[in-house]
Length: 307
Image (tube, rainbow, N blue to C red):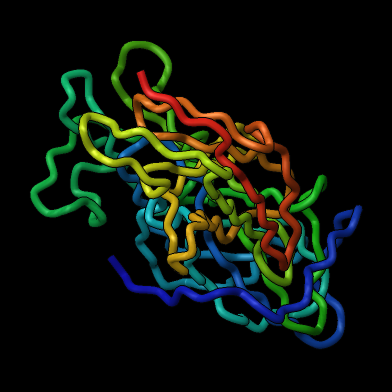
């Protein structure tokens, strides 16, 4: 897999969303960066090869990147890949941002528990060595016109004469499904959203034990908050989970969700199997993640019982 730079996206000016469509143009030039992140799904692996990234205007394509990049989208949960770094393009209005995908595969859990691989081609270069392809993964038109990023209600936006950035969220959970009928094929209809932001949004879930609360042993083994996971669920019901850790060793266990698209989320807490807890506030709780900030959600475990 081709390596790429991962970094926190800071200090770039927002991309202006406009309400009408027009040709790309204007005086001067702007710089565009594109960062890819992932809303997690239930598949075991989701690998795509992106051959080209371009802006589409009335005057045609403006290519941002024409070197192929192969990436497992699941590795991007709570992380990000910078695909385009400050590409210089004519300043002006563009209608679409598109990705041309030359190949892909997904790995899913089969009926018998063994994993199965579905690929756009049995000789797709992104397949792991020795992989046995179970069936076909269809990706209609993605190698020709590419897939379109949904930016604004009318998919038009302006590149000003300053650095701009687009955070692109590839929703794995909604992008792959079985083809109709009994063919056994899978089909790839990517669901991609974008945000024009100065920095990604973040949510940190900070969990403590309430006064006098102790966690019961499970199966004869001691239980700590490190056995818990926090979850965030977006408006499309895609859920991401992270284990709690105590990096400061101060009794506050935290799960920090990075590179989120700004918007509304439901925050929850998952205890280990066999443990029932109550919390203050009662969960799930609604929070709004804002561009450039990390919102902290304090949670106190008020009771904990085991059968």
